[in-house]
Image 1 (cartoon, rainbow over the protein chains, first blue to last red):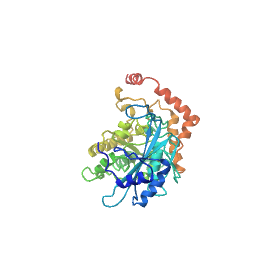
Image 2: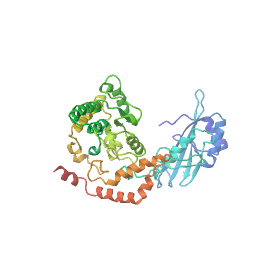
Image 3: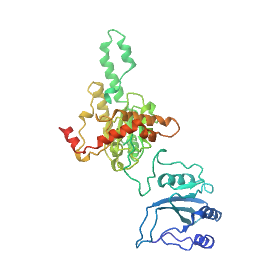
Image 4: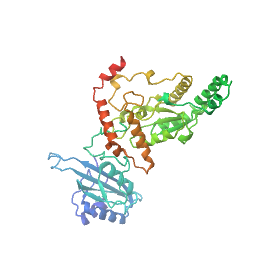
Length: 162
Length: 252
């Protein structure tokens, strides 16, 4: 399958300043999570001032196979910004998090990131550091667990209602 | 649930104090029955696509208005709650709270598969498997979603039910056809199920009541409290016997 059109500007920036060497065709490039905020600020200065989305994914530990090397349990957070001009391009990148690690929040740069990050925190359980109001968004406030994790039991009973 | 409902009216009290007016009671009763069954003001608890069909039913082609059914935006002025759509665990206390705000006499109509049983969202962690786990449903309108005509039919049946009840012939769960065995699922006992633990309704009321303080719900505390533990044990015991064995006895 053909991936999204390449963003030359982003790739040059990542290669020159962020030490990224791999640009897979089917996924956004991986960036060190310590430089996540710096990259977002850099892109905003370049005109990418529309916060599009943040998507967190949970990966279970995986044994080494043809598909790739052995992987411990981890999270991936993909962020996308857009340059709101005629034919404006999308700048997307991923950050890899080990279990228990957090990622810097982008609320300071993009106010619209607030609820999107809360949603990902609620459903996947990724911690966004320095988020001003990191509460659950979709599930009840006292819900236990994060439903979109791969090891979440789907038939979890909730006593008064089922 | 129906048997608990009080159909009082100030007129009745007035007549009880006036000797010789008993004769008028039947006529007045007819008048009140006519009024009660032909002015079903609806509170639409529309959460998903059934709500769109509900809107179609309220629009000009089917036109609920012609039977005195006016859609109200507040539970305090409504007689019927039409639950149209999937109710989630987060939404359920809110629905219950709105239901508690409706004045008696009141009725509940479950519109669509999701409100009736949860449909294919039934086994999902966040979905209530049927609103009759916490609301006394009078009429079930099946469909996914039901036609406006089917909703109209449901409301006509509700009118019949109101008339029958006011005439002293209540129709309850006993007259409802039993759920086919292959469709039975281990789940929470419904409101009119004799095996339903008494404290269950109390727990649900409490969790709805706790909404008063901000938005937090005390479901966790409820689950961890002694009452919650006892209830969980009871429910586990209820679910333990094999599902097919129980309905077979009931059928006989």
